[in-house]
Length: 109
Length: 115
Image 1 (cartoon, rainbow over the protein chains, first blue to last red):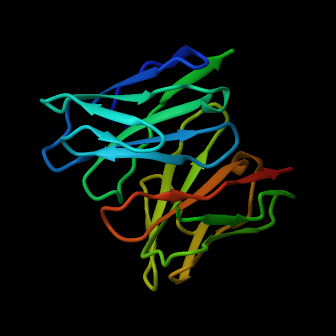
Image 2: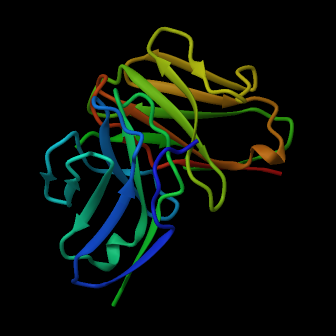
């Protein structure tokens, strides 16, 4: 069973920041937080991952709380092409990826 | 970034026949490949994990004799759905990672329809 909790759906205006929350209260100290997204009828796409520190790449930023029990994925300037289901997963060695229901993000013009 | 391909992208077969789906890592050698299944409006469910040259490890509830996995090389894994039935109709997705601790790269998926 999925061990993360995410809101089932969110809307965001085009050009605005999209902030997607995830609760992972049972995460262990050596488990990473990964974020993937899946656009309709495609395979999931890797976005970003982190352990303790906040991370940023060309796609997004990942903010992890100090107690590591939750995190937020930030898409700084959402576009219509960012409409997708976003999955938050935590795993130790990346060989055990359990996908939950995710958050369906809809970016609206 | 690393690219994983799947073939075919779509397949329709008759009930009782077998279907083979290929998964290839195009620009890297994958020590481990994974197979997932996704039913409409549901999330991905891990079916099995395979390492090159060894037997696949199947998740609970996945029949290993029905879903045959062969990982003969570091760039190719195949999933064969044997004696397919309509309830096997689903979106099958593979993924691969370079080595433990690195992100998984997913293929585009194969939509199987069994009539």
